[in-house]
Image (cartoon, rainbow, N blue to C red; front, side, top):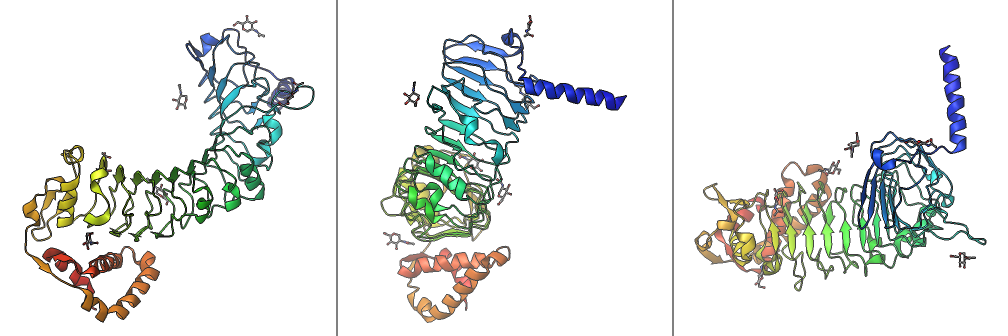
Length: 465
Ligand SMILES: *[C@@H]1O[C@H](CO)[C@@H](O)[C@H](O)[C@H]1NC(C)=O
Ligand SMILES: *[C@@H]1O[C@H](CO)[C@@H](O)[C@H](O)[C@H]1NC(C)=O
Ligand SMILES: *[C@@H]1O[C@H](CO)[C@@H](O)[C@H](O)[C@H]1NC(C)=O
Ligand SMILES: *[C@@H]1O[C@H](CO)[C@@H](O)[C@H](O)[C@H]1NC(C)=O
Ligand SMILES: *[C@@H]1O[C@H](CO)[C@@H](O)[C@H](O)[C@H]1NC(C)=O
Ligand SMILES: *[C@@H]1O[C@H](CO)[C@@H](O)[C@H](O)[C@H]1NC(C)=O
C-alpha cells in the first residue's frame, strides 16, 4: 500500500515537472510583501514555494523580486516583464534551471543565485540566453551575477556568451582549486568586469591568463584561499586594481616584491594571516595610491620594518590592532595624514617612538579614551598609549653606533638570520621569532642614530652571539 502511494506520488510529481507548474500569483501581494515606490519590491522569502510564480504583480517601475529561502529545486522560465529587474533566488536549493530562464525578463540586471546547489554542468550558456529575435539570441543585460556558495569547480568556457555586460561576478565559496583553462577562457571573455570575488575557494595560485584581459578590474577578493604569497599575476591588472583582499591565506611574509606592479591599490586588506611574522622594507612602497591598510589580527606579526612604506605615501586609515607588535618606528609613515589609526591589542613598550607618533596624530585620534596601552619596560606598568607625555621620553639618550658590533658579528648574524628564516614557521611559538624581530630592529639601528637607553636594553639582550 505504502509503495503504491509512493509510486503514485512519484508519477504525479513527474507529470507536474514536465508540465511547468507555476505558483499561483493571482493575489501574490497577499502572500508576499509588496512595496510600490520608486522601485517595486516583491518580497516572497520563506513562502515554501516550489516553483516560479506565474506572473509578476503589476509594476510600472523597476522591480526587485526576492525569493530567498524557498525550495525551488528546478528554476523555471520567469514571467515576462520589460522593466529593469533585480532577482534574488538565494537559499532556494536550486539544482537546475530551464534554458533561457531569464529570456522573458530581458532587462534583468542583477541575479543572485547564491547558496544553491548549482554545479558546473548546470550553468552552461544556454541558461542565460536572451530573447530570440528572428536571427539570434539577444544578449542579457545582467551586470551583476552572484553564484557564490554553490558547487562549482570550473566555469564552462562559454558561460558568459550572452552576458557580455557583466561588471560584477561573485564566485565565493565554491570548489575552485585551480582556475582551469575553460574558467580562464570564461573570465577573459567578460572584458568589462570590475569586481571579481574568488574568496573561500581552495586556490593555491591566481593564473595570469584568467585576469590578464580584464582591463577594467578594480576589485578582487582572494580571501580564505590557500595562497602562500601575493600572486605576482596581479600586476596584469595593476593599473586598474583599487581593492585587494588577501585575508586568511597562508601568506608568511611581505617583501619589496609582494606588491610590485600593483601601484593603483587604494584599499588593501591583510588580516588573519596567522603565518605572517614580518613585514620587510619597501613592502608597501610600490603601492603609490594606498590610502587604507587593514593589517590586523595577524597573531604572529611581531614587527613592521621602519621602511615598509615609501617616503611620499600618506595613508588615511591604518588598522594595526590585534597583532603582536612590540614597537612601531616613528619613521614608519607620515602620521599627520591619518584620519584613523587603530593600535589596540598589541604588546607595545612605551618607547619614545610611540610618544612621537602619538604627538603627531591629529586630535580626533588622540581623543579616543578607550585607546590602546603600552607597557613601561622598567616598571612593568601599563600606560594609556595616547596619554604618553614628553617626560616619558626624557631619560638620558646616548649617541651610539652599533656598526662595529654589527660588523664584527655580521657573518654569524647572517647565518642566524638564514637559519631563522628557514625555521621560523616551525618555531613561531617558541620565541625565536621574537629574536628574529629584534634582529631586524637591530638592523634598523645600524645607521647609528640616537638610541634610547631602554631600546638598547631591549635589543641588546638577544644578541650575545
Ligand atoms: C489562483 O488563486 C485564486 C484565488 O487566490 C483563484 O481564484 C484562481 O482560480 C487560482 N488560479 C489558478 C490557475 O489556480
Ligand atoms: C527565512 O528563513 C530563514 C531560515 O529559516 C531565516 O534565517 C530568515 O530570517 C527568514 N527570513 C524572513 C524574512 O522571514
Ligand atoms: C536581433 O538582435 C541583434 C543583436 O542584438 C540585432 O543586431 C538585430 O538587429 C536584431 N534583429 C531584429 C530583427 O530585431
Ligand atoms: C583565519 O584563517 C583561518 C585559515 O587560515 C580560518 O580557518 C579561520 O576561520 C580564520 N578566522 C577568522 C576569524 O576569519
Ligand atoms: C628616522 O628618520 C630620521 C630622519 O630622516 C633618520 O635620521 C633616522 O635614522 C631614522 N630612524 C630610523 C630608525 O630609521
Ligand atoms: C580598534 O580595534 C579594536 C580591537 O579589535 C576594536 O574593538 C575597536 O572597535 C577598533 N576601533 C576602531 C576605531 O577601529
